[in-house]
Image 1 (cartoon, rainbow, N blue to C red):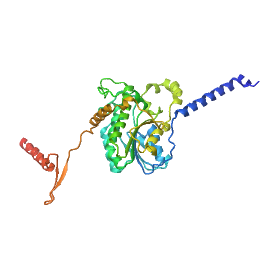
Image 2: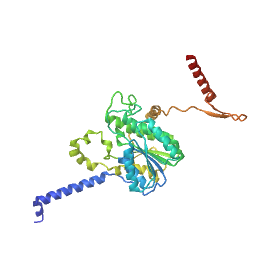
Image 3: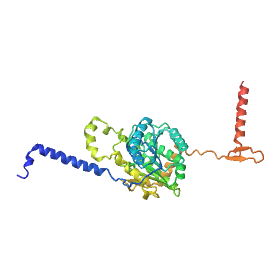
Image 4: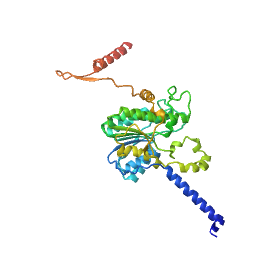
Length: 371
């Protein structure tokens, strides 16, 4: 009898399990999405990656290390960063991998990171704004900004602008902004940008990811003709620590039922890094700027991401909140050719040294009078 084996329950069970496992693996492989297969090297290129100690950031750093880039891992947790750096160096055989502290929840930390980096390097070929937080309870950064907006958008807005002159001096150079498909559900709440009146985790996350795309498109306009490109991307639904604040994926029930069922549909961190690598390295994108990518191909953005008025408004607010609108005083130097005396004059033409001495004399006089 041709199908006699079907009467053997053990054989049927094993066959069914094998079939299910095979289908599951096929689904898993399909869901990994596009791959960056170009073997192009990045030897000597200087790269900064935020959040490079775990997940997509770590895989991106590893791949670039294998391509012989000089990678700066900008991270908050130095212990985790050093551990990740050691693993990357051992696997890539590339010693030019560096851990540098950069707490994106602190503008002071970001400024210090940039100051230190610019003392070490006079060039920057690729900046990858990768770090992010997702659906966390309402928390504030050290500068009083809602955490998701603060980390995902404001921190990278400040970091990018502080490094922009270095990027221009290194042109052709690239800026990569890791956004999300969640931007299509986002809305910039101009009446409550900081979520002070009402906070919903998902809504705040979507807003921050839309801010990423608006920032990318507005920055691309400002960088026209500079040789610096900026593009945003969706890495896919990736199984990383980014989901640590989502109760559905952290409960006992989730570990037992939900995660195994969802596992085939999640990308691995390596698969999630592919579009970042594509946007950072593909030669065909050297002059492409202001675009949005997913699975290593260009995609259309949401209508809300095309609103130039909102983009300009968000840029102005971001400048103010990060302190970038506080321009330094317009100073000029004057040398007296007869006496070789050097003066530093302010906008009104007043000698700053003389002004400072007057203030000192005034304060000293007041102190003497009080005595």
